[in-house]
Length: 310
Image (cartoon, rainbow, N blue to C red; front, top):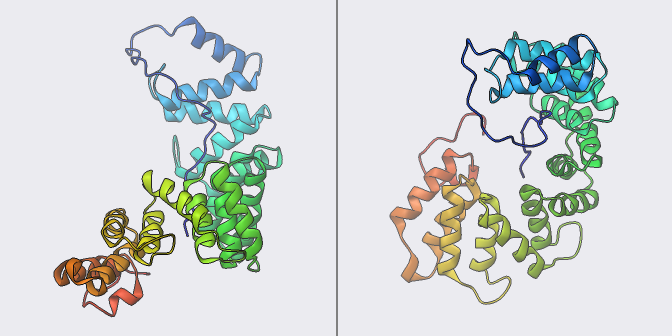
């Protein structure tokens, strides 16, 4: 299962690239107006807009140091988006030294103010860089808040923690329902994870036809584990006659996308499949890669060491 990590800043939409201003070009009136509105009128939206422009470096020369200063002004003027933006810069050390304590404080302020992106971002920080198990438990709660704010990837992450009992007890039925919601909201990982539970009938009835639809769509857009699961379905004839050729194609794609189980299953197909598709050398290569990616069973079939920490 995949916890998706992607810091959500306050950038709601992409802007068309514009030429950078030359160093000696006078600032356009709009920029002067934004600065004045921020610093004189104390308008939080203007402070945030100026911070974003300086960070992006599209309409203005990129200046992370000043962007961070304007983000701080936006946050001080009670912009939850501004606090989230500032927290991300503090976390990653953009525009100044990294400051985890301040990042946490500003993410929390934005999250408590109802800005769901900040809940998700703080959840990521606590999940991947937990100072203690209390932060892991809070990550689960924060992902749930992000999910309530319609962030699909946060729904997937919450469901992963429920499925594996991270930060609290396992709850497979709830995980299944939230994976479904994540998929419906547009999370490819959510569709992959929900498709798997439908495929094996985990925490609910099996639905092979729907599983195949979800996994095929996720594989098409590059989800390696979805390609693996779809390949397994075809290899075992779970949703119709077995199709070893197509299974091999999907498992090769899964392996190329660094799915360790995809590489392992490819090796198994090339070792134990019909005589006309067996290829001992290619099977050994697939098993070696699976081991390198952390598949412990594959490591028993090869002398290649697993990745550190696998």
